[in-house]
Every structure is written in structure tokens, then in C-alpha cells.
Image (cartoon, rainbow, N blue to C red; front, top):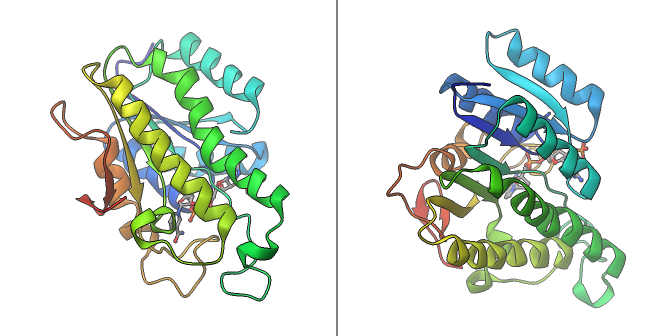
Length: 237
Ligand code: NDP
């Protein structure tokens, strides 16, 4: 069993998830880098191990119940507990923003279902399965998006927007139910970041984008819970 604090990051073989693994491991966490593509996940974890970091790969498709159960069983057997969960895995199920077919009026309902399955129910499945391993303390980060803010809601991209708004609501429901438990859960928008999802025009580097994720993953015992943050500052729902 590890004496170190243990962190799980979902969808972590590239982008924000990968760099979050690297930085958490540098802070001294035993990090479980998860991905649904085993080869990509193994390679990513090995590249961080080669930097001398404590990073272990475990396969995880956040849309599959048995995959989440297998991760939970692995954590129980190898670590006996969990301290940090970063629900990072996400998809952008819509056509390109503001393209002719990105209107909600012609949205493909199956794409909207896919968005919910990965971006909302995935994190919920992980929370249901892994919060019992948190031993009354821990930090959960739901990587959300400004595109899910009701206060700033615009047109287009309904699959992504609806799934992230629902993720935000889920964050608040869980925070209420976890009050007094020592387990904190917050939603974080990383800003617009240059990743495969964010594209090359985004203003922020991955290192800048993960700062707020790291902040929410490493909150002190008296840190906030049930909030929505960007770069460590509260933003409107
Ligand atoms: P990427 O597309 O680079 O990363 C998304 C990751 O999620 C990939 O590793 C992908 O793997 C994985 N993933 C998708 N579906 C599943 C699944 N079912 N199970 C496990 N893993 C899965 O994008 P980012 O790094 O930018 O995105 C990370 C998070 O940040 C997302 O939640 C995104 O919504 C959020 N975000 C990003 C912004 C940006 O500007 N980049 C802005 C706001 C929020 P695979 O190859 O297997 O699909």
C-alpha cells in the first residue's frame, strides 16, 4: 500500500489530463493515469515514469460501468484508498461551433446523448464508485467549461453545452450531499486551451490551463466545495 496520497485522472493520455498527471506526480502524489486506449495510456504513463515520476496506467472508459468497477477494484487492492479524482475525460459531440449544422434546431439527438454519457454520467459513475474510497477526505475536480454556464449561455453546440451544464448541477448536488464529510467537489473551467479539443487558436497553453485544475485538486481541508472556478477564482454558474 502506498503511503503517498493517491490521485486518479480520467482521459489522461494527452491534453489537460496528461499534464495534470505530470504535475500531481511532481507534487508527490501516486498518480493513476487512465485512458480508454490501452496502448496510448501505457505509452503516456511510461513517458512520465521515465521522468522519475510515480505514475501507473490503468484502463478506463468512463462510459462503461464494468470498466469503472475494475478501476475501483484495482484501487482497493493496490492502494486501499483514494485522495484525488480529476474527472477530465470529455468529448465535444457537436459539429464545429457556428458552422451551419451546429444549431440546436438541427442537432443530432444521438450526439447529445453521447455528450451526456461521457461528460456527465461518466463523472457521476466515477463519483459513485470512488467516493467510498475517499475515507472522509479528498478532492474531486469536475473539468467543466464556460460553455456550460447558464449565465453566459449562447447558441450552438447543444451537446457539449447541455452536458457541461448538467455536470455543474451534478457538482452542486454532490457537494450538498457531501457537506461535513471532508470530501470537496468543485467544477473547474480551464479556460480556452490549445489541445486537440481546444484547437490551435486557443490563447492558453496546457500548462496555463491546468493551473486551476491543480488548485482544485489540492485544496486544504478548509477549502471551498460546491463552487465553479476558473484559474482559482469563482465564476458564475
Ligand atoms: P482532449 O480532446 O485532448 O482530451 C480529452 C480526453 O478525454 C482524451 O484523452 C480522450 O481520449 C478522453 N476521452 C474521451 N472519451 C472518453 C471515455 N469514454 N473514456 C475515457 N476517456 C475518454 O481535450 P482537452 O484536454 O482539452 O479536454 C480535457 C477536458 O477539458 C474535457 O473535459 C474538456 O471538455 C475540458 N475543457 C477543455 C477546454 C479547452 O479549451 N481545451 C475548454 C473547457 C473545457 P480518446 O482519444 O480515447 O477519445
